[in-house]
Length: 486
Ligand SMILES: [Zn+2]
Image (tube, rainbow, N blue to C red; front, side, top):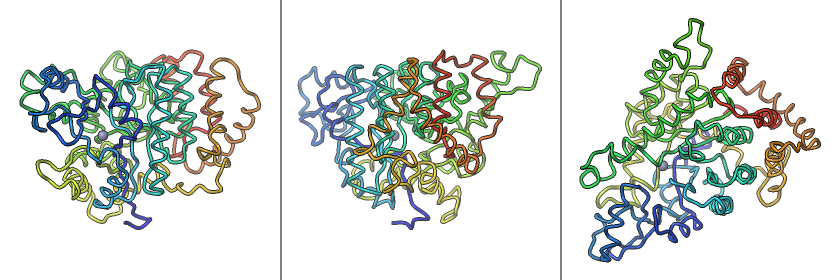
């Protein structure tokens, strides 16, 4: 493995814990895991484009004669759920640390009443997996987005208490209406206040009609995965920007999958369209006060380096302000295994392409390349805090078994205070933390005053309206010390 100064970290790598596999195996509609007589491994079917093939084979009742190549979905191999396999994959590719996450579509399909408990079970599974590979694995948790608001907020209280959790993975649908939904803002505030960045990952792509009638039969998954996924991410972030979400939640930090979709390439066009649109500042003669999409990219957004080409990686670096500080290496394992009869236990081309792009764009062995390959992830996701013995509550970090209830209590305050039942004593304790955090921020954070002012202005202008919960969440964000420099 690499030295401590040049750790290689994979921030985009998925796993399916036992609780999730069981859930998928019990389902009759997508997403599901199903065994077919014609294939050794069970198949994982998630894409709407695969439903037709799935229904056809089920209706025929003859799945024994179908070769694996013609079965819907993808094989569920040991790469999906085995920690030993994950570690072997990491060792094979020289990866020191993986920040694992549940893959799409997460818990989007889970009934509201079950979502909270399911999310908790899945997070506990992830915790156990990370514990079993101490120092090698961390994880992004999954939120129960279909659950009632109180349950959802309580889940943030749960995951913030988990020792190995470093943020959440989130799809683009949010609570059902996308990420520009005002109802989602309190959740984003709670995540930001609890120093939980969002790893934004696509799943739904674009409507299948856009791929034309030949796509399903002739083009496999190429169009939805190569183009639908990146456009989905791009649209989601553009909607957040237009709605003023980044101003409304200035401490929010997001890591975008697949190098931000097409955002690095299209940011200029987005900026131009906004500047020329009367809905924004295109119709006024005064100096625009909004932050540009470029500023948001440089201040609140990180991009993974899962782009497979030097051309794309250079664009991502340029869009991030021309420095390598906001790019984080990833693999998308266990997806994109070696094609045809390739050796799944050997080197994966999908990984080596991404690593080669970093070397090509930044120079092999350079300090900049080392940042992208792992240095940035260590800083941004605080992976150096793996040994927290003795840290305890002093820095707000409490281990799951011992301190679960303490940290959950802080977030439960969100729920209580939104109902108008403020806990004075807790506020005093938190106020002390605020002062400490403020001192820390003075040293570590680059966030300008202007950013705060503009964020407030965006809210006042009504681009995002949050109702009375705003003042409470503003207070809470302050109490918890905001989001120090990631
Ligand atoms: Zn992925």
